[in-house]
Image (cartoon, rainbow, N blue to C red):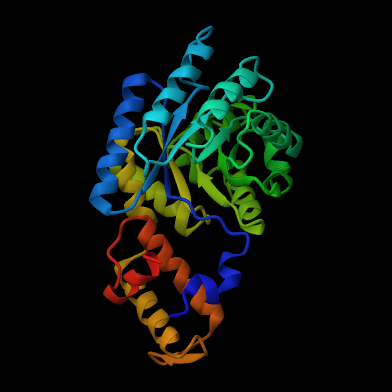
Length: 326
């Protein structure tokens, strides 16, 4: 059997596939609970459906940065082998950045799925961070970057071009604050962030930069963590209208709504399975299916639908399970 990832090479070239949810926590009790929840949901879905990012930037107390870095390192090292654990370190110009990297990347770099770099302004910031990560011995550790200012949005395409970068995230709260009151507080809410033109423009620039370079665009937070409907609606608009394929969670109650909203619909999963199985039977030559012509361009699309379904723990057509066991 010729696997889709081998036949449809253009679908894989330069592309990064990540869980659709990135869950943040910085308080010790919540970090431990997040890792436990990840283990439970991995068992439930049969795949790790969200990353856990342990937070140094907002989680560490002033003066307690070194202790917090040591804590998140120990938590990462103690996590289950199948766990996906990342760490958000301090910005590259923060006094604690160098020690963060030395402790976290130096000791747990081989265990982490990535390092999140906050307040990235330029491609040079990414290069500087990677130089420090490599010096700590974590020479293959991927990085993600958080875009939080108008200037960083302007440089998003350059930043996304770095080969070690997997994903760009949008920092909504800092982005709004960076405008000195020119953007109202309403634009930080679950509804307002989808209507204010400057916020929308920033999101579209980041999503476009990521797709241009085969990286994953990760959407900003929804602060109304107790409103599951608002969370799910925001995730659905982010994915179906703005092109984001990943989203931040800041509360455990937000994880399942994100998975639900960013998963393909059942009918789309079924169609993808039918087309790919028919294509495989035709040795990936063009086919006619349900009155439509399909070739490798549409095969690539439907393979991506199946990949997203698998990443969100959705049920797959029976005969397509083999694609994810090889």
